[in-house]
Length: 248
Image (cartoon, rainbow, N blue to C red; front, side):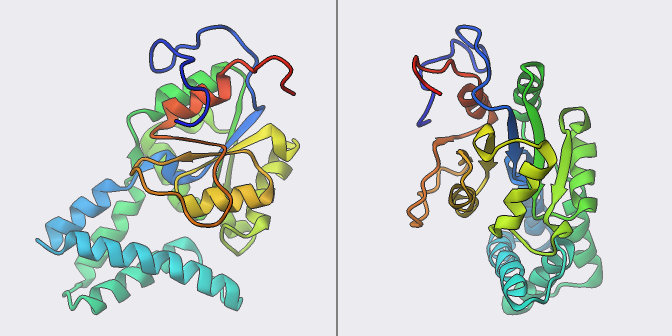
């Protein structure tokens, strides 16, 4: 972790009371929801090919959202996820029957939270930090995951880029949290699950935390995250760590 190191005795125990560094935190959905069961199902349906299918599918999923946004031909995240799956299976010459397609898409409505999430969110909430999602997922997908993870009590706002008919890193996507919270951008920590989203939030002007669960290298965008860690316990330390003397 690149910030707030050495400030805790146990995963979420703060050494000394302090006002949170930020008034609110805006999360990308994948910081909170675990997509690994989708990959497991892909391997079950296509033994020995699941990882390859997942890689091509994920790449095309994001390419489709950005290409459609640039072209002004918007479709929501559910649609481009299904289109990406169909293309990936075709490219890999896999027999994607209607039943298998439906099972893989249904898995997106069955996501649950990463194990570290509930405790971290509860600590932030009890400390007076306001929470929101800012996600490319559509409302149906987000609400299903929130319900499955039993996280509804924590989030004041559930913001989907479907509202602006575009996708992050469109600046309008990041603006949604400012408008919803009624705060200045430097009062909101943006928590990204991918390096490109962390860069997009930094370009917009947010302080950022990269929740780098896969220990990936930083993207070459010249916009590194302010702090990086492996889970939301690390993130909570950053938000609740005592400020240095003289800090604004």
